Length: 223
Length: 223
DNA sequence: TAGAGAATGTAACATTTGTTACAAATTACA
DNA sequence: TGTAATTTGTAACAAATGTTACATTCTCTA
Image (cartoon, rainbow over all chains, first blue to last red; front, side, top):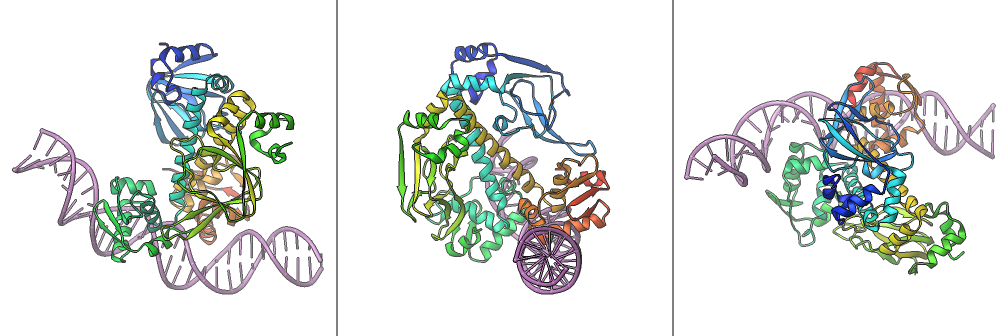
């Protein structure tokens, strides 16, 4: 295979190695190498291609007005850069992309990739699944962040877990993970939960929560 | 034309009326009428079709554990329901959908719609544009909500406006709109801004902001 | 151009969350 | 099974935001 990592990419899932090779060969791609520290993409640059990390790793990084940089995330093979944004209206890269180590990127033009999807229904469905799943994820996160208080977030969260109707749910995350998910600090979350307990809304035993007062709990998760 | 509203739909943009008719006819669609108040979709139901509002209007609505409902948004022709989620992994409707007035929905199976996109590159690009643009929008919103303080949100916001480099930006929203965008209350935003002004970070004249101390302002928009 | 409505500026107080620190309980694993 | 690491519970104080209310300024239009 030309680029063996690709068979682990969700974009090419369901395709045989030979089919992947065939697809890549049928299109005008390039692969570009970046030495460690090199800039692959500048924030604000128009997204004109699909870029997939083949080897090494790159990072997304923002620059503020004084030129100081803040790392956003690392991207490893065989992930694509800004995959869910590619075909957006006037889509631009939201961050700078810098090579962490020597890295190689596979680059396929937007419209060529569109052609590929047009020719292979599986590729199309893979990409659609990726983008839609991303939208679902973002929308879900947004819902939690848009609740004002921690009580609201927590009430909404446990209400959405399986078992909520029966009045007993189990949270399969650590408090820290849940706090991060809500965008709050752990002690604040612990406090809010213990206050809800002493208010008689819920009863908590580590990760197991019993819902005692559905009515009052529900008034918390309103808009 | 069979469904005249469709030529105003972004999904079919760039297609002639005749082409739209041709596409619709080539596929196994149904149109279903819902009397006012009828339930078109129950939250949690798997998304198995593309559903486009043809006439009337419907609303998205959430139900809490006690059965009380909260309206989320109204959807008018020719918008589609949960368009960005359709092909997500185990995609389910996030809300109940109820007819506000007598309403008619065009229903096309997911996989049939996939075939349509496969057969018409413009339709495919239209849909991809819609989903990716939605992901961009959600991601953008999320970025602001993930900044802790109002100062951080504001600093990041004005830094991203054209003119930030020259040190002078104009905000083309009302304070209320900006507050909503940030997910905070208007008086809190006004206070934060006026404190930043008395701290010498910026100088504000209604909607025109001059950046006085870039360095200190930038330290606010860090993670 | 007067007047109504919208947008903005500001203040006092209540509420919520963050911060920091430490103890207790649990879990992983050597 | 005992010890280290992780997770959870809790407290006191600081900081930020919400709430409510009102005055001021701007903007649109009759």
